[in-house]
Image (cartoon, rainbow, N blue to C red; front, side, top):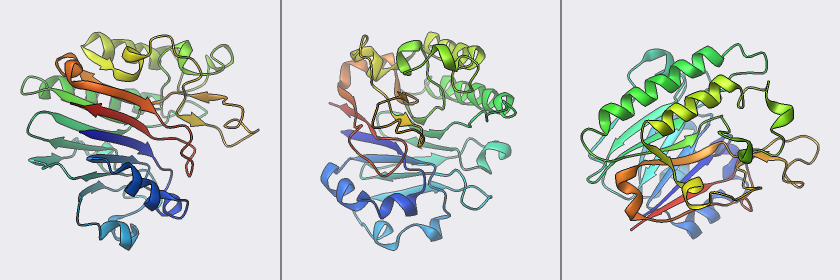
Length: 252
């Protein structure tokens, strides 16, 4: 089973930049998208006409903002939101139940340059952790998406100059520590403990992507009971069309 997650920074925009060809070539069993920036009625018609996939979505009330969508060839037994209006109104979470596990497709809030939304972000983080702790009592859990936080210094190119930047603040990273200590495993880092230069997001300024001045903020985490099924976890930095790139998890 191949799962792919990608913050597309606008599904209508990425669709014109080679997305259909890439989607057909990769042919994932499940594709999780974040920051779709569209209501379902605004999704490209050709994309929605793909009968191979069931499509779930949660769009923000604010137009052109946030939003998540999941395309699945695997049977989904159930799909729910986080069931907290302040987050669901921004289209931030889809919770899917499959036969063998739960899958959360999440777009974590950005704390903003002035840190104004950091408390909102951390509240979201705690609610997601609470939900995952509840779900894992029933079956294994996978969570993927844009966490908007680089966990450790190895996860961004310039850690020293970003210690006061949201996405690398001490209390944001402390939540990541808490998340991991609760039993959730960062699959890419688990398999590549010393890998440097492995990023999933780059600023659009100053040629950051060409110089690989980036951050790893897009993840797959799994409960430890799923680790024996992990075949591969990788990043696809060569795939363009968004300021993020896709991340892949393959399970046996």
